[in-house]
Image (tube, rainbow, N blue to C red):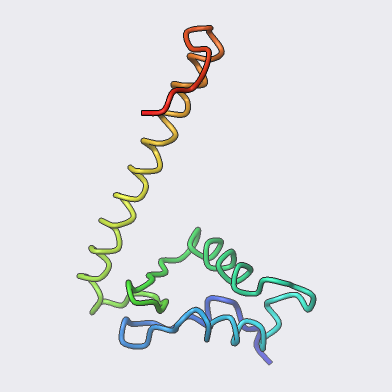
Length: 115
């Protein structure tokens, strides 16, 4: 019997996207979720995040995960643009926090002011 990997649970092609609730059920039934896990949804989100380090996994705006195929170029472009915007927003927040920390550490600021 061949071993199944978590990525095997995620279908290829946008038209076959799987909702996270269904993915949680599948992951649980295949033993990917430890027996005493309290938040199975959170556990699966972490599995997805880890899988994204080695695979492209797209989440449709209305929910549903899938691996893109040659027919999903437009969706892949949209995904990339959205992830870039999200990364830029996160970076802007980190940059602001870093600036405030430096100001606090060098005595240029005594208290963080609200904008």
